[in-house]
Length: 413
Image (tube, rainbow, N blue to C red; front, side):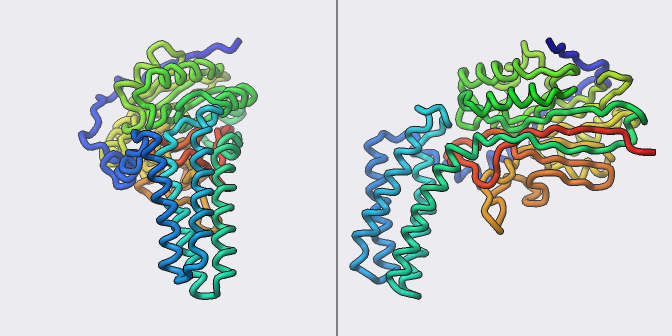
């Protein structure tokens, strides 16, 4: 059985935990849009049937007005209604089949918007090149939409991968054995599914020296749900490594401090909150872990990082654990060896040539996913494990979930 060892030395006292009064994400436009579209989650089934009928009629009206062809309105209306009904049935079935647990009503309304947009574009094609091409484009686009929804909800979210990369640092003594770190981010648990079981299996297979987790343990739709909190606890207690498991909190909107922090009270997981810890990782090696709460208020988090770096030893590899990539410029300035984060989900939905539709990062697309290397600092932005909450569709597209195994080796002389 593996034993979990906690840190050898806490460097000075943790900084005061006082977050800014303004929640940057909660005040953002994206969050407010998600809240607006979340309203149908409270509506009864009868109201959603009425919404489906209105959307079906609207699709027909869009087609008739934009295309100018009245003869094809009925067929477009019928096909739109059938395909949106298929969306509804699919979304309603996901919780029953243990796939995802978001409010189907809100997701249905959100997903109806691209269907209406595709209808409008196909109607424009009718005006430009004729009815046959327009109808064909309409039908292909709508069927591809259904296929993408099936792939994005049922298949890709469970194609969990373990990405590996190797980095070198002169802060690890020459001749030292490599240090293996497993990074997990953005679990976003609603209820435990086969995906979380894959996380445990891959973690056991990787045999890391250390496991680190960078926040967003719960889903935004379930961040006050006691059953979710219990299931997060059940998952975390199964993650073990010889030299410990360390974690930091995610976005304050998601990982509510009053509900998520107590989860760690009786877990063998060291929650780092504005702390700098020198961990003994065996074979004469040490690792400096710098753990910060993420507020997304960059001046606050930048100041906290500066205070912690003032006490971080320079002769030990330095690992920054912070939920978002937004502190990368500061990490480079401080010469931190490795910075592990998540938050962006890699976009969660990526389109060919376009890339991520959204990143939720104040740095935009600058650090979206994968490995970046500036100066001595290596940044890895994880695509994460779970899915966004509230009215966001529980889908991944061209952006499968991942955990990351980092091997740190001493630099060659």
